[in-house]
Amino acid sequence: MAKMRMNQAISAALADEMRADPDVVMFGEDVAVAGGPFKTSDGLLAEFGPSRVRDTPISEMGFLGAAVGAASTGLRPVVEIMFIEFLGVALDQLATEAAKFHYLSGGKLTVPLTVRASTGAGLGFGTQHSQTLEGWLIGTPGLKVAVASGPQTGYGLLRAAIQDDNPVVVLEPRVRYSTRAEVNVGDDAVIPLGVAARVADGNDVTIVGLGGTVLTALDAAGRAQGWSADVIDLQTVYPWDRATVLESVQRTGRVVTVEENPFGGGWGTDITSVVGAELFGRLAAPPLRITAPDVPVPYGKHLEARYVPDAEYVTAQIDHLVSHGELPPHWWDDGEVGQ
Image 1 (spheres, rainbow, N blue to C red):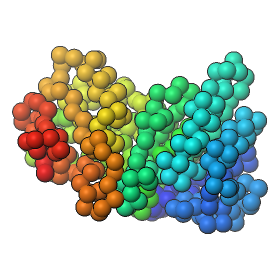
Image 2 (cartoon, rainbow, N blue to C red):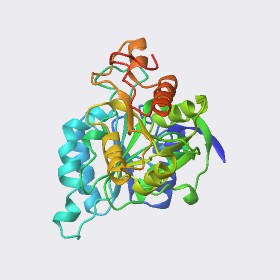
Image 3 (cartoon, rainbow, N blue to C red):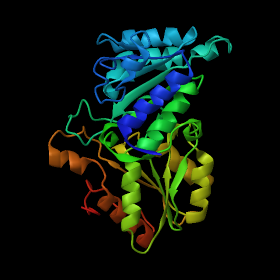
């Protein structure tokens, strides 16, 4: 077992898949000579050469469209989108073309395409480069969406995505690229898509995190006094693992999602809706979503830190939920909890 940063684990996953399958190719902006803007493909050009690791022009529509064609005709391309926002100019290629080819061809075509993108706040990139934007992708039949929470999931989810015969988007919280941990590598470390992981055990509340908020949820649970929590790393947000979440909430009686996205339309809406419908009458408190406010991500350091839910705020919100059996106000509402 080697200790790696998350960006190194991603590079290791790419290398392992490229060694195992000569049809795996990679391209995107600055992924070859520079080793990736966040060093997630460092060393791959030297090992696999320019025919398999290619720098592209600044044209996401062009190189994602080329990847859709390559995947449909036998290759397994991995495309890097430097910032998730840049996917906007090429979303048609992914959501309307890649995600639909298998269906439109009556099952004759598969599109084993992996799209990687960095996401999230915390590094001062400003409002146009700091969003998570899972909402652009969730609810697109034919597409799978996974989100890494650290080095191990960065490695295991990416390998599963590349091996999948469907188009998969793997989102990588860039604030976690420098997170360092022991990483199991090899085939046994592949993390199946659509399966969540319970990363902490407790009795009183189920906290569901995704990507960068998983460590926040763990930190919040560690601060708790008077309650303990199951913490679930969702890992795949579409389709998400209903069985694992519902089993946990059946035991704890409470569910909380910790989301970096704005409140409106966040990924937690589907989870809390399903839990409320399936376990209605068995919950000890209403489902709680802890999110960012419905405003653009601020650029200023202190404002950006305030925007994203931190562990202290999450703990305070859950304290209120457990002790009062009712939803606490958001920090941007009157009667703030956990300021």
